[in-house]
Amino acid sequence: MAKIDNILLKSKFRGCLLGSLIGDCFGAPFEGDIMTSGGKVVLQKYFDKLEGAAFKGPIKTYTDDTAMTKCVAKSLTDKPAVDFKFMARLFVKEYFSEPRRGYGKNVVDVFAKLRSNKFDDIYKPANEQFAGMGSFGNGGAMRVSPLALYFHNNYQGMISAVSNATRITHTHKNAINGAVLQSMAVQQCLKLDPADKIDAQKFVNNLIEKMRMIEVDDEGLNIDNGTPYKEKLVDIQKLLDSGNDDTEEIIRILGNDIFALHSVPTAIFCFLRAQTPIPRITTDNRFRRSIQYAISLGGDTDTIASMTGSMAGAFLGDDYINKHLLRHCEFQKGMSEMADNLFAVLEDTNFT
Ligand code: AR6
Ligand code: MG
Image (cartoon, rainbow, N blue to C red; front, side):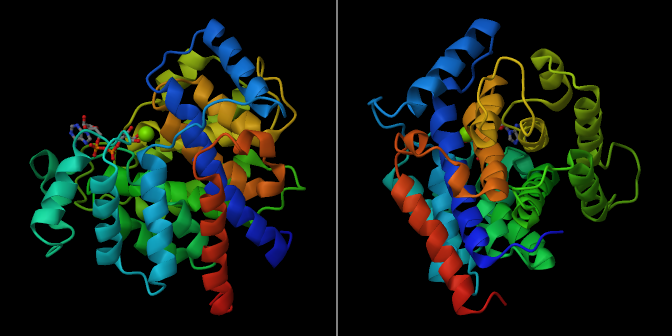
């Protein structure tokens, strides 16, 4: 494996957070859409226009995905020892200062309870969601990229931090494991040289091996499917192998909704599939292709494109991001600074 030097790593940090931002901002207007072939033509024109140097349009605003990703990044730079109570406080402060960012319907109850119990037990409110079952939405997975960056050379540290950061709002196994899987995928992207062609099957095999240790049948009951993410990863391999580009079939197999199980694997698939040309997506740029493809599947477009974008950016680095695209996003300068700040914290500790 190629050695990733610090200049490239810094660019990958930026690429990852900017990829997450761009996916969110560009995907948000299409949220909930069912993409017809006409819709895909509109999407192609939308990207072509935004990439044009002369185009001036209203700034594309970000949603809860970015609002919460910002909190995770800030918590790591302000408290490098990682303080989950501080992270929870940032989530709540952020939500109450800008509640209209498209948060999930139920996660807002967690914020209200955290505030009223004064962060006494930061995991209790989420534990009580859905009659004690916990949320299995993708709200945990959508915000993990700063943790994957921060723990880029500390695998076990990352798994534990992602799990604790997710449990503040989402305690269902599928939400936690989905967030863990998303962080693993981003971490793998950071280690790959963008000059090399990705071996997609190997990329997924590595994730399957890692998930084997995570998805264990705790109760030993073997009554229901205890390894749902592994099954989805195998589905991704089959889809990539078959070259099947039928949108409806992909959605039927992988999903495109707000559940972590129906969106994290989809984002991984979009990122990997977009490393090679895709019918009806006209661009040579793999970063744009990844995000455009994720949006073209419809459904929870902002979150799936955001998760896909964080992988594409972590693999390619920010040099591959078209600067004209980027300038249409709210908070693009701030997000780049957050990536640099995170990198600086690690540099200060000599990446230990
Ligand atoms: N049982 C039944 N329904 C559930 C369960 C469950 N255990 N868990 C989740 N849902 P929430 P999020 C349904 O509120 O995950 C935004 O667009 C339920 O309908 O925890 O933070 C974000 O950007 C619940 O309201 O939010 C994300 O893309 C919904 O899933 C997306 O929404 C969302 O769970 C999810 O955000
Ligand atoms: Mg969303």
